[in-house]
Length: 123
Image (cartoon, rainbow, N blue to C red):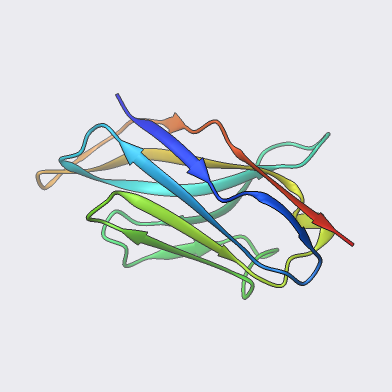
């Protein structure tokens, strides 16, 4: 069982910055593949960014490339999302997702979501 706890959301003016955190507990002997998704009001949930279990590979949606940076602390199984140059269209609920990981050298599949943290960007 994996629990994901997001934090760091809030309200910010356009052009501002926020840092989101997601701490994964459970399966502590594993390095999780961690991702961020977001869902704006009235829209479908969309991929934002992901980071590999080893932290060596990152992926970004085109809409955030160059503005957002994902990183992780493997010691704490925590993923961060540094969001800069925020735009009103970044307003959404941001969700952390753990979909598998490396456990004692072996890949294991699972899928867990956090409860989300709200980001509001005012124009």
